[in-house]
Length: 443
Image 1: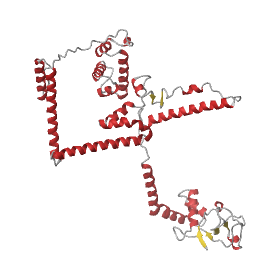
Image 2 (image 1 turned 90 degrees about the horizontal axis):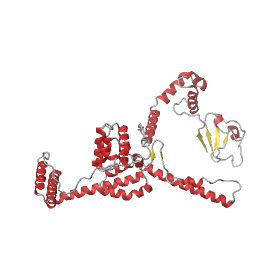
Image 3 (image 1 turned 90 degrees about the vertical axis):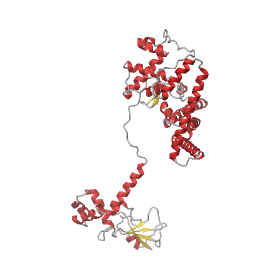
Image 4 (image 1 turned 45 degrees about the vertical axis):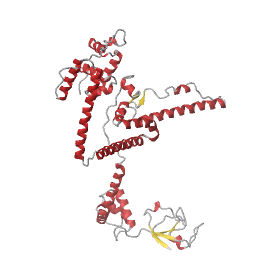
């Protein structure tokens, strides 16, 4: 049984004939029952029935030739390959050199055939387009767009921002103090020498293995911090606060499992639970509408407005009853009632509510002997006395606000309150003082 096949036109690319060891020229014979490697014979060895080891003369075979048309009836497959090799060797457009290398076609024939079947062929063009589209689709999900990165923050040592970032230094991508920071101390006195006994050598190797395990734990903790974005703790807390209270409780409970499931899976779980909470709340609201006999959303909006008004009236009555219960001074009650009337009518309250609770404001803070007092000017000392803030804390808050203002080009009160985790009234006084004195500017 014989079949036609194809092979490279270059004789050096094929193994030699197994019978006479000469280079094979097409057509030649390939045994279909021997190999690998392929058992190839020239026509002369095949006609005399050459046999070698397992190869027998009655085995099935294939006639390997490229003497058949592929794209054009007047061009054989061997000529097609020779044309492509000549264009690769001589360059596109050098048709005279291509024809000289082929020896079987003229310059005009080579140019016409190449342009027709390899340049202007719609089959090849669509195939290349499909390959390009498939490559783009394959890399579309994995390509990461480039965005210019901001200059990483460089907090000063032991500053408020540095403590919030757990001592992380973004410019170096490392921490000031590592986890298990003194793990290397156990190795400082270990020295491997040739006269160590087997037991001593084993003990030293055990210490090195323990050190390696501590390094792995250090790297594991670093990876968890980086993967989950725990370096910027304030940003992490702001993201957590966007969830409802019930979801925040689950977030706090499931935080310990985040290191097991990974950051993406953990976020998906929290988001799905938040979505479930929103759906349940919406279903409960729709059930409330159904109970109230509401059948369309126009009536639902009216119902919500009336419900909100009734709730506000109930809160006012409750607040009034509490005021009447705890305030015995009739004049103070009248002043409070007039103030509430002004507020309800849209006017600014003209009379402030008097407080007879007996509480007095705290006296100014005595700064004598407190560290950092010598670094304050007279106005800053007065501020620290009035807001009852120790000089060291004031200087730290001032430095944090100045750094953030220089970085952002301005600072808002909300940003100042996010940076300084103290009483909001104290933060506002510090913020207004720094604005008034020209230390920072408003954004």
